[in-house]
Amino acid sequence: MSKMILANLKMYQCTKEEVNNYINKLKGVKNKFIVFPSVIYLEKFIQNNFICGVQNASAHDPGPYTSEISVHALKNIGAKYILLGHSEVRQNMSEDDELINAKIKQALNNKLKVILCIGENLEAYNQSQTKNILKNQILKALKNITEEIIISYEPIWAIGTGKTPTNNEIEDIVSYIKSLFDYDVKVLYGGSVSEQNINQLNLVPNVDGFLIGKAATTPGSLIKIIEVAEK
Ligand code: PGA
Image 1 (cartoon, rainbow, N blue to C red):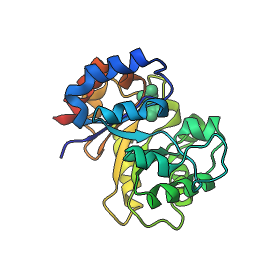
Image 2 (image 1 turned 180 degrees about the horizontal axis):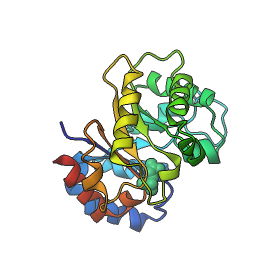
Image 3 (image 1 turned 120 degrees about the vertical axis):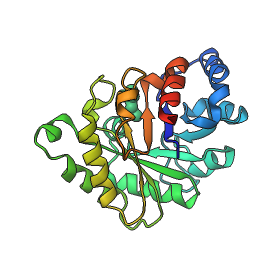
Image 4 (image 1 turned 90 degrees about the vertical axis):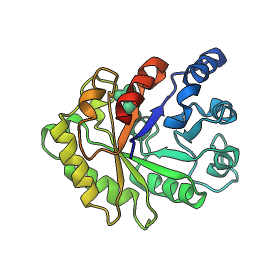
């Protein structure tokens, strides 16, 4: 089975021209990856038949929540996936495990497929605390949840830094994460995946796909990554 490829466009694309250009260059491979665009352009991607996810959403049912975006609305316009627990959201928007748990429940109730992002910071990595941190994040985020979700393992120190763990380290962590579930959970790797390192990362035997940030904003790079991951 080919691997899942997720393009997390974060807040990189800001103009219609950038988005149109991106869509034009990638329409030939639109069935081979899931794009998480700025929510402003979500409908544009959906109209062009891309498989779409969102980068975050409200934990609440529709109602008096100024500035928040309802999962119900996102599902209604055609989003299929949602990223939750991304480290940039945990840090910049002070999301804790309890809120992430509420958001996962809200997303599952609305039949979105959830990708839960987990990862350790550099200090925890250096102190060999990675597995403890990940287990804690999983237990708290998935409290009272039995539906199947997807995990993306993203060491915080690898995101946007050009650094990655070794293949052996990723393999070990991915098999540890899988051992915590009683179903065949899909586990992705994210953090500085690029066209330069995808050949090597693709050799990790138990990874089910990749979550790509910066490199996914360049259509040529994303196409190369997809080609390699398909092998
Ligand atoms: P990056 O981001 O590929 O730019 O390191 C990955 C992510 O944050 O999902």
